[in-house]
Image 1 (cartoon, rainbow, N blue to C red):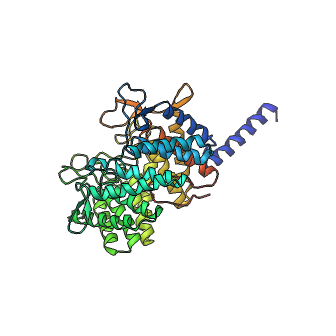
Image 2: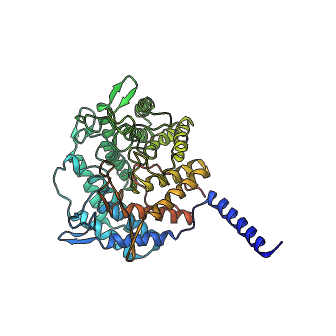
Image 3: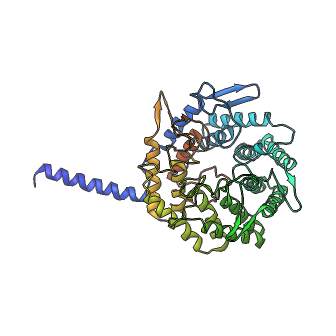
Length: 447
């Protein structure tokens, strides 16, 4: 055999070996380096206000503002800095997180908060989550006191009903009762506050009062006067049912589990042959989102919660059947009407990649691990290198695909992307990441 043919055979054997390895594990990236390059884009967006340090949402825009929501603003960036400190042990990142938390504390007001400023992803609950995480990393009582104050502000801003409480009857994960209830359960555990748990039960009662009993099962509107239903996770029925299922696990009160199961019957009546639920009804019958906000990565959290509550594998089968169809869409290579030019944690690649890694931890199916890697490689390839930092330019909204920008926040920007890289770094070290959002069920990392 001549030397040239031998070299070709050796190369083929090497490539096959790499291919087989790729099926079982993630690409060997320097995840901390990628996270640090993401941080540099956030860092150059910093703005020093009279109340302290804050970051702009869209640094490349002359009109960019700062934001105090977990979705787009300071709370999500604080979480990223806490995770970066956890990974590197560099105190400069912890100091950044503390400065951001100090700004949030300095701008808290002793007033009743309106319904658009209380939610997990839009207001007080998300601020409280970030501040509580800073307290856990510092043991500084200033942050503990602020987190307790936020619970009092949420209680004071709530509307009391015959059995429960609500905030302008908004039911969802992002703005409303379900997300706030999940935050209250989180903080009850982290700060050992029975009051927060009691408030969460009142939230669940308020949601039962606003449930719409249809022929096919229970359903909730995003808000009472909203003309459409969005039944997926972030604004609709599956997110509400997830919170009720979580409440059942804490209280063992059967009525919460029954309500969650009745909601799944409604969802079953809406799903197509792939298990997808329309983005909105009426009018969106053929529009299927594919990431966290209105797609399987969000709605599957309900099914997993029900699996934990009942140990019935029917719920796992619902998850995996839909997940297998979603892999067949090939969205790591092309877009769909509900999966557009977006790489974020809410609507795009990060949300999908995180979902499939979570599924791998649950099931051990290495196809899910491989697909998560494909989505992550697509995410890395879509980055823009500028000076010494990375950023991601994409369209936040499906309805305005030509409006593109790079953002710094959790759900649409560098903080969420950087957190994903740090989650992968933790996995590489066989550790759990520091940060787990209140609306995500925890699953042990599979080695």
